[in-house]
Length: 363
Image (cartoon, rainbow, N blue to C red; front, side):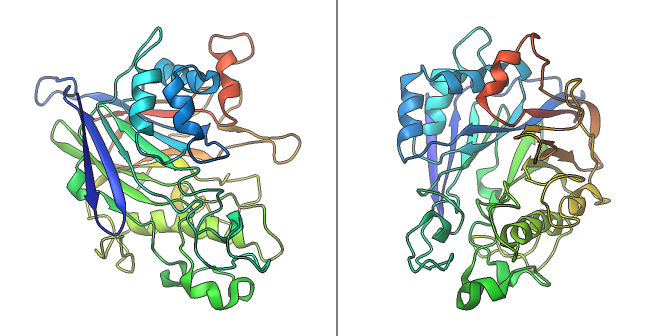
């Protein structure tokens, strides 16, 4: 049986759980858990398309996504580019993850509205209209496109989840907002192109905060570099949240960042490579150089630390997907699922232009 709880605040969020508890181990014994991020490219061109594909249980691309998840078997997983829609998470769990040669169960899940496709009512791209995909708070053809989902084998603390969907870009001190481009609309803009979430997970009584996001690609713009600047400041929001910045105000009106001493893992397609690509200078370094976290630098034999197979020669393969634990967590392994041609699982890579990235932690 699945129970669905809907909480009303500044936005509507959904946390679902089924009655099966997480696997138990003797109290006090260290446990190794696998945390992963995967941009699954499960976005669809129109509202309702993903739900229809999930309901069918036969969509080949989604079947491949599920196979990737089953082969890597993370205990906690962020999926990027999963269209937000009522019932979609349950359909994915029931019709894809729970079937096949290696079924996997995630009793707990979190999803919430995102800014992609959410109408702003403003003409943000200067074309004289206010109803295009570039006029949404985050680029999208319909509300919820390119959404996010957290899946977990461990309980999620619903009451403690924090979201920053509506935080305004102008409210970040020393921001990179290109006011000359947005003009009178500048002060209204939301910073997060999707949303930023803090999802606490309870692992045998120890709380680990999953800090998840999916910043906009630093491209598809002009000389004003509006997307590159936004990507930089979206990544900065996560870095500042970890540092406990008091300027941050979440969607319920609660101010401040992550409490001192918290254990956490940063997850998500950050759309920023430390060396290559179109990122604003220093964008991902705001996280990679933070003394509060560690970079296990997961690799695959096929592509090193790269996590995305983009068009050659430009931008080419990039490292854009990250699993970055706090320094108090012990890393016991890491990897990028990128089998070479002819190896088991290589046939699944066409499901997405991104690769699943995982890190094993002892907690």
